[in-house]
Image (cartoon, rainbow, N blue to C red; front, side):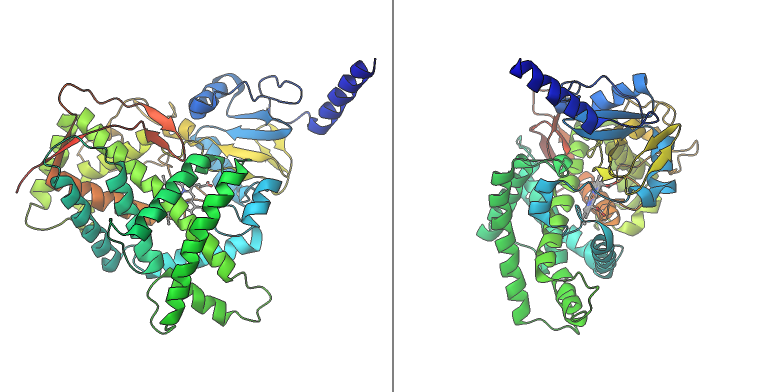
Length: 474
Ligand code: HEM
């Protein structure tokens, strides 16, 4: 009897705790206590969530344990939610475990005044140090020279591009934040990259807003934080506010200037967290996109040839590409966009949360509900793309072969929380991709075929593969 009573009591408590208004979005039937945990295959969560929209519509709900989540699907719905009603959805969910670790610091998980102040500062500093300027362009092209040399040294032998590309992309963040790049053999650099790799494996970016394997992450986290702290100490030795060299220098000045300002959220602890976030969000993402790019080029050699022909015609071989070339490379630009669309590397964006009751379509979503903007459902939306599941650069070209923007191209999400590094990422992807295409032809090792399998980790990345890069011209 006691057992029956306890079960009944728990069931009623669960029901009362997870009750929702009648106008709440519908969803698949949720089991008591665990909710819809077994409804979704987490290894292909983006596909499962997109499929559920066929049954439940563009706004539906899921329950994970006792937490309600609302999944938003399709271009029109995401636009309405993230842009039109963007203020109401600008927050990240606050979960007790995350509060322990991030304390509402940094750029990715923070909220409110602190997030606004830090985001504004990071955006203006990135701009100052060259997004769209020659200095950053040089840093990227310089980095290509190093990674290109590593690849040409392989003389066309099969290799896994992960490490080489990760090194190159991470060094761009190092240049912006620390003011210098590292040699790939530098022990400190190798350790930094390894630690980030372990962090990603232990705690995917996609799960950043959900409870994660806490202990392991704490340990890696504190090691990386120590490395960043020692960079900050180095900076302080010859820091000259009149001549800022990088993000850290600018941040130190901001701390100094805002001393005594009760509204200031600038502190060394926050500097460490923001730096961490720039690495976490800015390395693996761009690197994954480039790894998809190589694979797609090996899979579609005729498209690769067209890209190379356009680059040969517009840039030639006597100079490196520049951002100025983009307008004259419509086909290449379209291919890059299609790689990003099909690559779909942050398929469910990052979680948002409602900071007030909102109305979406016929439904009311109360304050404090976790929102999942399903970017997959937009990048493959049948209502927006002519051939959603086919690699087709024509999606971004008009009849005269000119590049056309598509509103439903939102791999960086949209609205208040839109990727802070979008311009930087676009610049890196364009310059790295055109440089690689100018110099190399990518193909699969003899006897193998390109497989577009993915693994769901920090990003939706291609399953590890080996590829051959043959030099086009000595
Ligand atoms: C957030 C995509 C590269 C920094 C995001 C979000 C997406 C995204 C989907 C979540 C937006 C949302 O919550 O609605 C990408 C893709 C990239 C890329 C596809 C490359 C191809 C970068 C780079 C940086 C960066 C290079 C480095 C500066 C950030 C930060 C956030 C963010 C700091 C959090 C913004 C906030 O919460 O206010 N990114 N990203 N990203 N990204 Fe990126």
